Image (tube, rainbow over all chains, first blue to last red; front, side):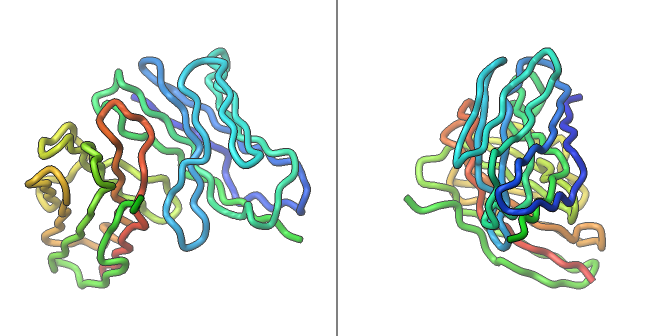
Length: 115
Length: 114
C-alpha cells in the first residue's frame, strides 16, 4: 500500500541555517504530494503541494520538488527563522488507492530553531 | 471565511466510558474526513464522507467507533466503549469535494482515556 517515510527528528538549527527535511514515498498510482505544518497549539496547515512529477511547490520561503525518479519530495528552506519551529508532515493522496483523496501522512519531523 | 470547527477541544474520560466529538466543516465543503493522530505519529484516516455518504471507513474500528453526517454538513464521531489506546487527537478536515485535494483541518479534539 501507499506510504510516506520522512526523516526522524527532532531537528535543531540555528536561525538563518539551511533546512532540509527528507521525505520519500511509495504509491500505487500517480499521487499528489503535500507538506503540512503544525505550529505549537495549532491545527495542521497546508504549507505547499505538488500534483505531478517535476512540479515545485513553494510557500513562505519553503520549497519542495516532486521527484518521481527518486520518489522523493524533500522540504527545503534557505534561511530558517525562530518562527519556523513546528512539526512538519509529508503526505500524499493517491486517487488510485482505496481511500481516494484521503491523505496518507508520514510520522512528522519536529523542527526547533534557536536564536 | 470560517474554518473547520471542532468541539470539545479537550476531553478526559475513563476506559469503558463513551465519548462523542463534533465537527462543523467549512461552509459548502462536501467532503469531510476524520483522522486519528496518536502522539508521535502522523494522522491516520478513520472515515471519509462525501455529503452524507461514506466513501471509505476501512480503517474505522467499527466494534467501538461510529460516525455520522446525517444532513451532509456537521459530523459526529463516537467511541463506545473507550480503550486506553484511543488516547489521541481527533482531527476533522474538509474539502470542497472528493476530488479537491486541499484539505482544511480543524484544531482537533485531544482525548485522554484513563
